[in-house]
Amino acid sequence: MTADQDRTAKVAELADALFTLMPMVATHVDDRLQKLGMTTTDWWALRSVKGPMPMKELASCMEIDPSYVTAVADRLEQMGLIERQPHPSDRRVKNLVLTTKGEEIKASIPTTLWSGPNLLAELTDPEHAQMLELVHKLVARAGGPTSAVGMECD
Image (tube, rainbow, N blue to C red; front, side, top):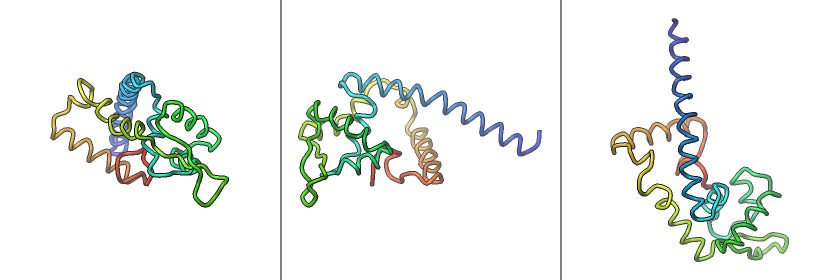
């Protein structure tokens, strides 16, 4: 086996391991969010709303079609987590603003998701630090967000 083939095999092994891990993490997140009556998309949107945010900006942040963000906003509004407010200078634009309940839920979600037994909590502190460093490194090399890995707009 050449050095290139060996490297390719190692990369494939790592990718396979990640493809095995991610659905397990996603299932855990889905199960925990379901207890709050939320979906992953709801959580993603809630995490993304900062201050008054035009719906178009939320769509861009979430990388979804602007027409779909209406359904997401409707759902969060029905749950009492956001409210639509008029834009101060453009009557055609509606801003999304977190309600007090929305801010509380947003703040509680990390604890809801990751307290108690879970796959990631089984890592030791040094393993956690090493894995986090490696994930941040890969995300940065791919041009992804430099703060919390994913999901939040700058």
